[in-house]
Image (cartoon, rainbow, N blue to C red; front, side, top):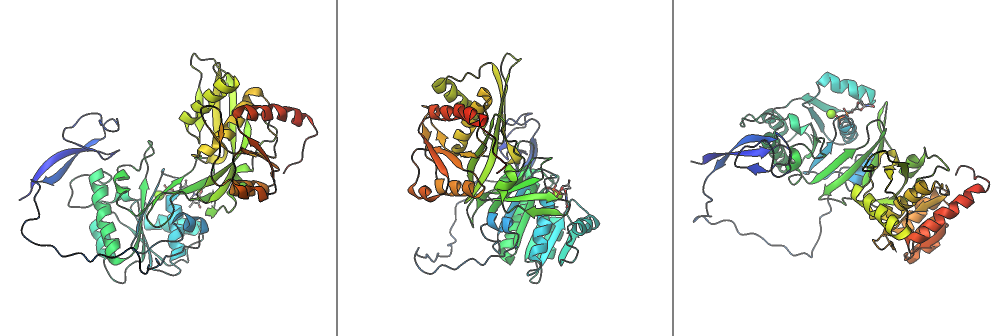
Length: 465
Ligand code: TYD
Ligand code: MG
């Protein structure tokens, strides 16, 4: 008989520890360790019984194309790599209230046109779901609804040939397995419940969409342990108070992981944003110092965003550096380069950096745009409104080439930008784009351009582009 042993599992990061303590050694979370009983025993070898021999295949030979279920919601399909693969499990993580249930109800309704779709909610009653569907104009969609949390009941309902082909579980934190003692939402429950459903999905070939809430720390609570169990992990993110939502693939066994889908939350649910650049630039204040348009890439798609910087004399001993939508370590680096190589002194100033519209930029290619925004703010000189910027900056102040220059320039030209500040070494295909390109080799040259913008701005103002 297997002995049982008690371990303590952190609900934030999933680390197991032999002893309880107030603070998790691994992630530093307070009061996150919960008792977990696992069957233990000495590791056993294979014994005398022989296993089945494997039939090995070669890398060449025919490839069976994955049949995918396409939702018709273009932004969703893009992020999933061109539709959902039967038998696969997806985890959709995001803050509470960001719109996960709304998105998945819309996805289920879209797929219900061609497949049997099931939506099981552990958070809302069926009537609430109906109300939501009414608001979304989806009352006619043949989605089968249920409110349930018991994995035993859910599995029994799904384990039939004529059951669902697409199954949404909202959310994984509400599930519970009656064979475990721990409460719903604990690592043990979340892991075991998900495991049961994922196994069933593989066996029955249905698409499993699991919703997972994220904690303040930005991890899917407890279900961080789920990330390696599922085929695809999508994060739904956005700023509260902004209508824009971004669906991002962070893991995808069936597609690229750097794709994003952009949505807008309206009164009638989530609508696709087909031209995100226009949206992110819509509220741009012209001729304001500290504003710079960055030509970025999100996956295969170019996206233009406004980067805003503000510097203000500090009243504190240690000046503030606050960043929204970018990496604070990277900001410190760019400021250090501007100080050391160009003599811009930020020491007595608070510095704020913001990526407008609620987007999170992670590319190093934004360095040059951040430097332009910072120097424009610091020198109180607005940049020309028709200029886009991209390029990576090295510690010596050199401007480094970045990938996909042509795609960035094309998007900028399409949106009416006339000038681009770019790294000196561009790919040859960028030459064909109809935009005036200024190549910069060093941040000193950027500073010269920013100072020059002041003189340009004194000329008659240009109309809105
Ligand atoms: P919801 O999908 O319930 O979020 P989650 O499942 O991630 O917790 O959406 C929450 C918010 O979305 C809610 O505050 C109301 C808003 N909302 C709209 O603005 N329009 C709509 O059509 C719907 C259904 C929701
Ligand atoms: Mg919800």
